[in-house]
Structures are given as structure tokens and as C-alpha cells.
Image (tube, rainbow over all chains, first blue to last red; front, side, top):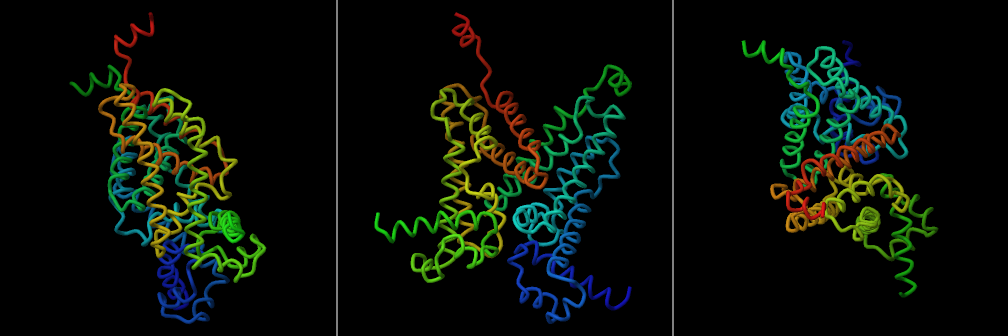
Length: 208
Length: 208
């Protein structure tokens, strides 16, 4: 990595919590200068515009969020249990995240009026996240672990909407209760409406 | 109403969609001047600060949202059906709202870092909304329409979190699918987990 590249990455890392907490308009040049220890010219030598810096800061924050939410998932065999782990990770694994909470929720609300480039970033992040959860459901259906009638896109949307909406409540109330409730409700949903009922044959194998 | 009071109200009415769409930092003085047709002095003769104007704009937008969501509810006898109407109103009655979507969601995300006064407004709005839905559940339990084991605060939180989270998806995807799914899931939830099972006695009365 060249020195310029290292500086560029460091600027993104320092700018990410500012954009995630204050939003695009709220992130002042003075905030960015204080966080990076650079002058305006030192920052914008590496980026075409505030827009570009904000976009890369979002990508950085989102990548961290996705990897926290997928922690430990690949070690789990059953697809329904994988989904349950993703749900619990959303609540439990937030130490490694960029400060300011879920970048998808923040950017979706911040950018949906008047910032089409950043809005597109959030939209792509959501689409990718829906596709990722949907793929787990697809795989579960192929394996017979998930009910044949479960629609992958719906299961994914229920999980994401429930968690993000509850996060909004948690942030206003400064309380763990809404996210605990969301996790409990989603676990019930996954057991009751998503997991394939054990067939007599499976049961016979398990019991043997 | 004095002329000053009328002007003050008109400023709030014109400023509300700007704050709701652009957030506190994004709402520029030039936007407010354009919308109201007033100079800076003409606006701030009526308000102590941008903070105060934003707070009153939020109150105005939230009041409209609540009244749209409660439309037709008082004419419904059964409390579970009242909750179902509130859920459907969230999706269906949005014409009268201040432009920019749900002010609670917008302000919660916009104000949770660095704007404590506005954040408190959103928090009070959420608390009031939770209490309002919770009171319907309480009443339903008293009447035997709602299961004895249903926790009013939980039923209220599930409804609000599901709708607000789905609204975030809808706004990013520009699609009706996420809110339609949320309404369908909440209707199932209200029928399956909230409505009291018909007792043999009730059934006997209905059948008579």
C-alpha cells in the first residue's frame, strides 16, 4: 500500500463515525478536519467531493456491520439456526460497529431526500442484505430444513424490517427491551412459520 | 387569532415538510425563506431559534400523522379490529401527511446524535403513541376481546417497530411490497396472538 493509499483509508475510517452519527449535511468540514487531523486540502486531495467521501465512509461502515452480523454463522449447519444467529448477532455484536448505529437505517433516512448517490448506496446495501438472507432461505428449502411455502424475499424482509424498526425504538428509548422483543418474536417466527415440520421419517432417524 | 399568530402558524406549516425531508442540519435558511416567502428577520421574529422552529414543525407533522393513523378507528367497536384499522391506516392514509414520510422515523434518526431537544420531542411522540396503542390493548383485555396474557406495551412495540422498519424498506426500494407484507404479518399476529379465542359461551351466543 502506498502512503497516499494508507492516508486515504485512514481518512475513511475517521470520517465514517462522523457521517454515521451526524448525517451528510450534519458532517461539517471542521468535524472531518478534527477527526483526521488534516486540513481541508489534505482531505480533499484524496476525494473528489464530500459526496465521494461519504459514499466510501458508508461502504466501510456497512462492511463492518455485515461482517458482525454474519459472525459465527458459517459454523452452523442448519439454515434456520443460521438465520437465528444472524438475528441474535444484530442485537449482541455491536462493539465492532462504526459509532452511530446501523449505517443502513441512518443512511436510508438521511439520504432519501436530495442525496441520490448516497441513497443508491443504501439501496444496494439493502438489496445485497436481502439477497444474502434470501439465499440462506433458498438453501434451507433445497435441503428440506425450511418449509416449501416460505418465500425467501419475504422471510428476509420480515427479519430486516423487524430488526431495523426495533432499533429505532431502542435508540429513542435508550432501552434494550425493543430489540429483545424483536429477537424473541423473530425466533418464534423462524420456528413456527419458517422451519419445516419434522417429518415422521426425520423423527424416526432422530429417535434411533 | 392575531395576524402575528397566523403568520407564525403559516411558517410552521411551510417549514414542516422541509425539516421532515431534509432533517435539521439539511434545512437551510434559504429553503425556509423560499418556502415561507419571508426574509430571515421575518421568520425569526416569531421563533427564538431554528431549534424552536424545528420542534414546532415536528409537533405539527406528528399531529397530522397521528390523526391520519386514527381515522375511522373510534367508529369500530372491537379493540382488535381497532388495532387492525390503525395498522392499515399506516399504509393507506398518507395523503394528508406532511411530505417526507413518517416524522417519528425521520426525527428519531436525524436527532439521535447531537440534537437533544429534538430527540426529546421524538421520544415523547413515541411514548405517547406506544401508550395510545397500549391503552387499546388494556381496554380489549378488560372486555375479554384480547388474550389475558397479551402485554400491552409489547403489542404496541411490535406494531410500531414492524411498520416503521418496513417503511424504511419501502422508501429505499420505492415499492409497496414491504408495507403490504408488514400489514399482512401484523393482521396475522393480531388474529393469532392477540385476539382472545372465542369461548364456548361466546360461540353459543353468536350461534343463537
